[in-house]
Image (tube, rainbow, N blue to C red; front, side):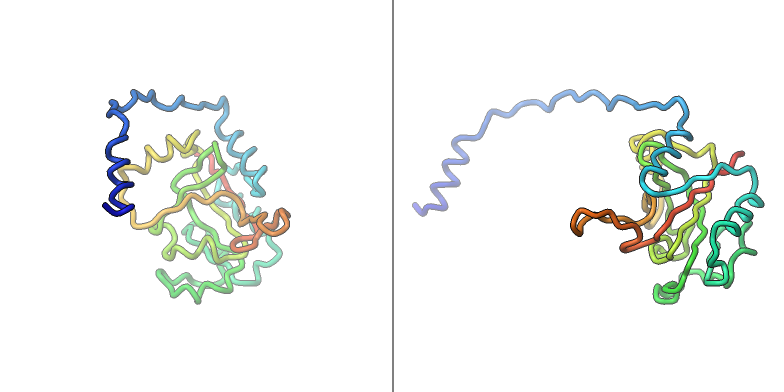
Length: 198
């Protein structure tokens, strides 16, 4: 008998008794007194900004006042904000055509208070590279679409049909090099979320 066969025989002979799976209780639901305030606190802590707005006109005013680079390439995938865009957006462009985007303005399906993220799918973007290749990212989400936790978020998207989706939380960041936090290392240098009151 080879050493391999001896080892496999010993493993087979010394297997533990089969036990039924444990009865795991569901995760305890986390709730927040004010999910929107929690979302803002977390997003701010991870380097993002949030504005509560009542109209798209407020969004336009904030963008015009906050970005001194609107003369550079700005893409809007939010129809109400198309007049801010500096160039028409071609749906499904080649990724290299997006390389010079200074600001991308997108919609999100919902936001998650627990980690400050927004959920986007390819149908909102035209190209999945948009929120990652731009220098600055602005997102619009409805105030009624704030989920408290990732458990609730996954329940919401579990039965949905989409080709590609991502949770995006704050600007790109890394602390791999000398444990020094760097924003915008491999993605947007800033992320602003506009929460639109309904």
